[in-house]
Every structure is written in C-alpha cells, then in structure tokens.
Length: 327
Image (cartoon, rainbow, N blue to C red):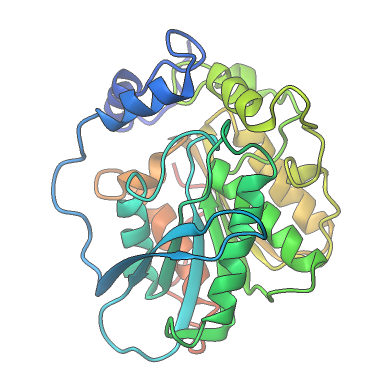
C-alpha cells in the first residue's frame, strides 16, 4: 500500500487498530464488539476541564424511552452562548456518552458553547430510524430548554462525527421538514452520508487506516437490517433534497473510507444553495479529531469546528483562518 498518511498519525492508527474489535471479521456479534471496546485502555491524562458536567435524561420520541444526555457547560461568563446537540460516532452500533466525553469537553472548552451529548439508542436493538428520531427528540428538548441551558435562542447547532455526523445531517433534515427547531449551523465531522454508495475511497482507503470498508458494511447491515432502504434520505442524506438546510461546516480526512461521500455532501449542499465550509485534511484518517493534543491537523480541525460553532453566537466570535486543506 502506498501510505499517504501523515507519518505522525501512523502510530495512532496502528494502536487504534490493535485495540478496536475486528468487527465484520473475527467479531460479528454487536454485544461482543461492545465488550471488546469497553475493555480497551482509557486514553492517558486528564480530560479537558470544563465548567460543569451533568447527566440526565430527556423525553424520547413518542412511545420510546427517555434519551440519556450529558450536558457540558463552559467555565466563565454564563451569558447566552451557542448550544450544540452532539451525536457520537460508532457506526450506529457502538460507543456512547463515555467514549466521546473528551471530544465533547474539547468542543465545549474551545467554542465556549454548551454541549448536549446524546446517548441515542443503538442498532441492531433499535434500527433505523430510531436513532434519527432520538437525535431529533434531543434537538427539540434543547430548543425548548435553551434558556435554562444558558443558550442563545438563535445559536442552536447540531453536530456529530461519523455515524453521528449522519444523524446530525438527518436531524437537520427533520428540523427543516417538521417546522423546527431553527438551526444556526450543522457541524459534520467525517460524516457517513450515503449508505447506498460505493465510492472510490471505499477501495483506496478501505484497509490500513483504522476504519475499514468491512467495518462500514457491518455497521450498515446492523443499522438498516435486512429490510432497510439504504437510499432513504434520512439514512443517506446525500440523496435528500438539501435546499433550505442550515449552513454547514464539514470536516473530511483523505485517508478515510468516508472521504468521498463527505466531500460529495459538502459539494451537494453548496449546489443546493447552502453555505458550506469544508475543512479537508488529505493526510489524516477517520477519527483523527480526537487526537488534538498530539496531531497538528487534529488541533486545527478542532479549532475550525469550534470557530464554526462560536460564529453562531451573539458576539460572532471568530478565531481566524482554520486552515482547510491542511495536512
């Protein structure tokens, strides 16, 4: 393989590959995959400090259980600030509030926003569209309680990474089509946007960069089930009508199986008249943003996401150029 990865990232890719369950290979059962992931060593060091963290539940969709959330409030002035509803990655099957705790803390700290991390139901126990509906329910709750959260009513943001980016885009579609809540921005971090596609990056980046094409097919099959429609616009937002969506900030990585569909989604949003910024990192891999303490590209990507969030606030705080295309 011609290794296009930044050499500084290679040790992290190899370590993540070693501790991550071999899903779609030696590990085929979701419960076993979650057990292996839970047994992985925790990252070293203390997580980023924020002002306050609260665990609670919020009402789920009609007829569904409550949705766990973790609310991160920044330190300092409690004046109205952006509110981010964050959907974690993990292929709709794995991960949760704990696995993405550091990412949410970092976004809260860097952007000065309140972050509401959503513990949506996982597949295959709760297949499509249950996670989408949980994401939308959390968005509704955040909008209805924006004052109590310390948020600015005009600065509600939906965000997510990987499968969470897929859910964030789908929740934005529901917010548009169901008459609210009004969103100021969507921040999509290497999102899955086309579950029916077979992009070239599935082949060029399908092995050797942590996330694999086999992983994605396993995730998709568990999420949609045998009767699911991968072309449904809430499963594959790239196939949706995109006009009228909020401005988007899209982060993509060049050594990621999801690279092509993430970039295609940014282009399709722009074609539909949606304001888009794309922050592409050609020598990075899927999941790199979590390594902002170690990788310059990750620090720049985190700063760019934080700036995109902060720019929705009442003071429209901007920290300058965040270097799209770094790598």
